[in-house]
Image (tube, rainbow, N blue to C red; front, side, top):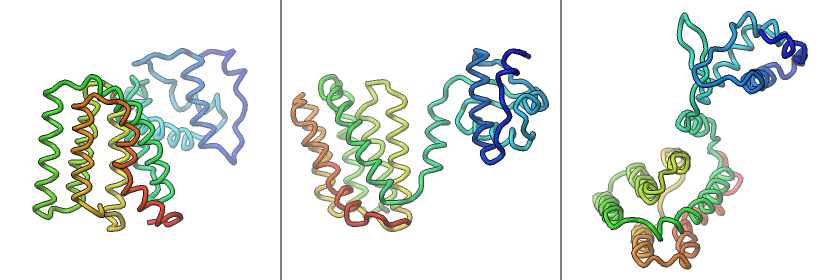
Length: 243
């Protein structure tokens, strides 16, 4: 154990034990330059260094496991994992509160992200992926015509947007779109949010496909503003409501 590191450590205030334990373990990993696959010290050793209970340490370990930072192997110990987008995003979506204010913030972030990445897609999406978008749009149209539940349409809608950026090979963007959809599905399940006009909904997606075919990046911002108009109007009408 690094004695110099132990001397730097201070006792953790008891009013913020869990939070401080979490941050202290992260600092330990960074200060000791631990790499993927390295094992952390035992609970007894870390408990002595940090001056907190093993119970508090275990709570911190659970949070780090949920974030995809640590991997626990029974009987062997806790190991540092490679960076894991999926675990991070899953943890984020699980902790989102079902609040319209949160929903509007997510819409604003999503629009900013998609404006940036859609501009790239417009210039470089290959013909075969454009055809895949058209096929997904046809599925959405069929679902709407058959009166399928909104939740199924949301799922297909998510696939459409993830397919938009598949050629960019950006895993984080792909997973964030999944988080945005998780929030929308939650509101849909609670029967609070529903697409107001399916004809417009389909037209807006066809407009995105036409935009890509035209390779006209000057219309990206206008396209997205129109695309998200329905959810923006809904969120404006339901501000400050918790579901």
